[in-house]
Image 1 (spheres, rainbow, N blue to C red):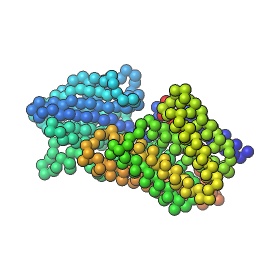
Image 2: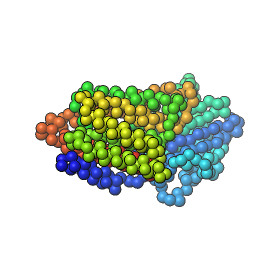
Image 3: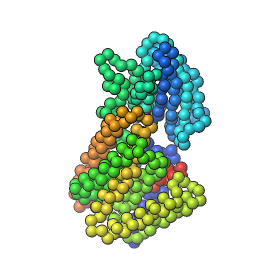
Image 4: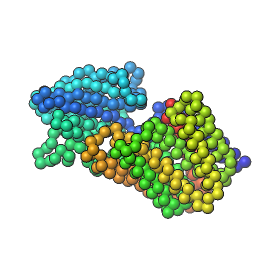
Length: 404
């Protein structure tokens, strides 16, 4: 009966989150846009521009919004103090799924140092990141991240500095980007918090975090270096599933390890497989069947294994591989030249780890403190409610990303 009550509470949490969350929620991907500037011969002072915007970002404005005029006014090349003239941005008919692409041409006066300025989406979202990539006529490629605090980039090398020092985002800059990425990526944070909720010792926390870190560092490197790049949408669905599974596992462990919760979950995955066979959703039926088998075996192993924390560490590692591919999304979109990949990858990964460590250092002591108050009753309530809420978010993200 106790298990049934917990399962019912978990289901109610799923349903309430479904109605409360906005239909356009996107947990993992930060608000980002990308531009490529191909500068022509120095004498002509012209450039061709290509801008990529996620379709989600277009929904931040009313229907019928004039995006051509908006981009021309908010993404500018400036010569000295004079804004370069720009042709009408044209939206391309062919674009990758989930993206809008605009192209246009810019012509600048003969005098004045060139400066690139981006105010794209800054008027509706101050945390928006714009990645600018500039190719010189001689083939040199430079990149920089433009944000609300530093929206301009002077496209020339000051005396005494090399282009690498002044015209490219530095390793510390990518570290800051990595930290912002994980702190703004609610799905990654939800996964880490779900792991921490039932951890009983500092050693277990270190094991879980280390397993997750090693795994996502491996796949982050594989993706950014171009060695292996799976379909992004499949990774996003899998990330949502990982959150749901770990949180549901928490609820199952606290409810006495009955059969209702695992059976309910495997049944849902079976329904997902049938949906895929009928042609709905992004994942294949075989993938859903594999996730169902994995979930069933995982719950059964937890039931009989004398050291369940070791199994949880293995799960953290396994799903950390998926989260690493998710982390790689921003760096892959920038399309950095080869000699810039390693510094960017190193700095970004350091930032991710620092952000993750910050979350652990804040959450873990608070959880331990609650465990000592009122004989741990507050902690148990938080662990149950937190696990149910995180599980609801995970399932919501799976539904939105696979069928939305």
